[in-house]
Image 1 (tube, one colour):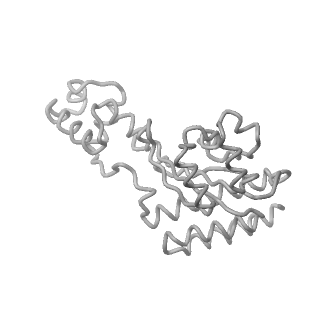
Image 2 (cartoon, helix red, strand yellow):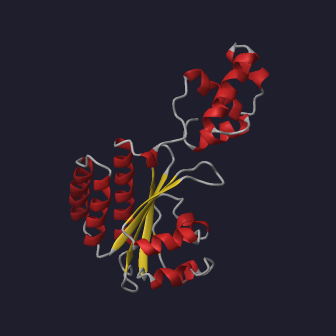
Image 3 (cartoon, rainbow, N blue to C red):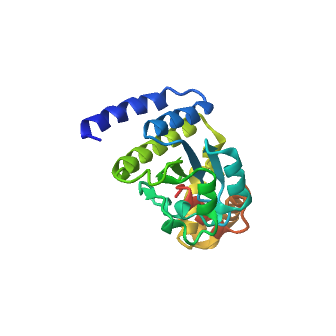
Length: 240
């Protein structure tokens, strides 16, 4: 991959994604690009940062359907090392037997489904959702000597995919709530600083009742039980 060729590819690829008008087109375009890289199938997982203990996930995939069902039924989301390592956007992860040592039967079952080698990389959206793009091949050791190219290209493909899903208002990119007023954002910021309702009322020159009113409304919108969770969720999705 020469520098000149990469920038030509990057420009053409960005134009292709910008031309998409429907979410269903994203899948076929990613498939086209991963086949050009010599791979068979892909999975693009969109993972939101909240709720912390049960993050919302959305999957776009051309993996064998039987494997996707098996992965979900065994809840391999909980043990898949790729998902953990890809929380750092832009870091490429090559699939190896050693990588999956602590993941139970995940590696063996993936191989049985025809996923014998693969590579993953991620990108982050403005709302802090992570898009993890994984590509797989039936061939063994198919990622050797390709790490730099795969890392760079998959990161860009993941970034473009997130942009398209956001532009087309797909549900996979919807945050819990982002329609906060300026006053609510001010209260959120001071809440995150550990200030009490009484302290916030003095800082903002409003009544304590008004502060509590806004905090209660935000709890309902975030579906959380206390003001600490409000501040944590708001920070996690980039509101403050």
